[in-house]
Image 1: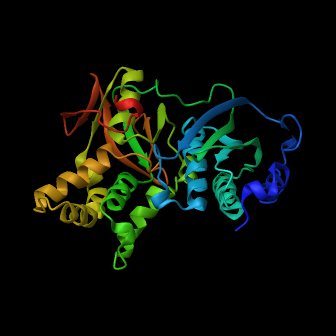
Image 2: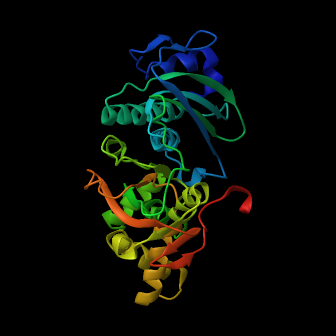
Length: 337
């Protein structure tokens, strides 16, 4: 084991930067006071953090997948604005007794996810800078940059009554994976592959970046990071409409989570009747975050965009409903609100 404190900051940075590739639009990369890149259009910027004991725990820590998750949650936000990713700034803080290979795995996970997004969208997404610090807790702070043509950014505020609601990617898998981890499934040697896959989504979500290239002519769009009920509610509030979800359109997502719901309820010693299983699976789909699926509204007659499914309609009114019945926005929120 080689600790960071054995190497010093300069050598650690050298090892980390060996994992990155430069981009064609990069004029000055890491190593100077700031990066310089060429952009075309408007700059789109977002930032997000993962903090130990708030967003993850060392009990389930996989350094590479932590890097994947840190990059994915930021890249998804850029894509949800209709932008092409341009680059990432990666600031990392870890204890100084961390093994350098663990930190390298974290950084390599960030690089790999940025490259996956770039391949899907025909873009180069280099790590163009960041910071490294010592801390008692592990913290990742990623800033993602993207570009969009003038007037083409997609916000939350453009939905109109009559628009269809479209989903790309999945819902509920990450939330189910988290509850499986709390139920001890991560140490179950006989855990079925489909349930292990749900845990994998929690630890390293895989946004469907390719679907963004085929998105409908969206009037509004959002990355589902805090749950469908919450994030679709944000579009509804910003746009002054009601978002009505068609439960039947979610049925295959719900069905895929029923085995996990049975496992979790068995572990809790609670009700395992079909009604209880369905209730938990539906809860994950409606309220579970961190799959980083994309939800968009678009005028009718968009055809069937590749990688997207119709899950509802925007109507007059406010809030979110499921087959016409109001749904509380009960997804994830920091500070308990």
